Length: 162
Image 1 (cartoon, rainbow, N blue to C red):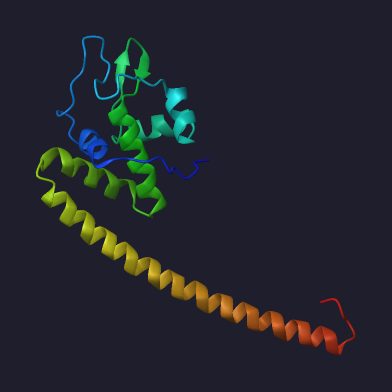
Image 2 (cartoon, rainbow, N blue to C red):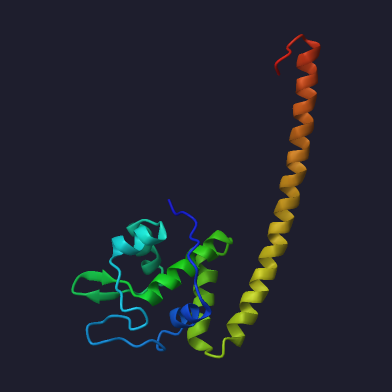
């Protein structure tokens, strides 16, 4: 089960994560932004997900770890992308929407197109969540009313601890 990720990600981290060609690698494949490579288990533990979740997102085309022989090696860029993926999921975006947004960074280096796209999606999500919140508040009000009616009926029948 995935847990919420609250890692801090800077604007520079996001730029690095999105611009696949903007980062440089040393001869041994290490990401020069941080110099650290993560194994599947290390990154999974760091982000509070399972190794299977990382492979799932790789299969969906959202992550593309390096290969060192048969071993997956995740870079700082991959870690930031995964944080953004998890945040997108937590906000209710579909994998297709998350991939679409991440892919826009590669196409539009000025970031205008993807920011306008993100703004549209975020506003739509806010409207949807506000509608759901209203529905939940209405349901809670109805349930509390039913609870009070039930408590009163039990009191009339002599049940004091309801």
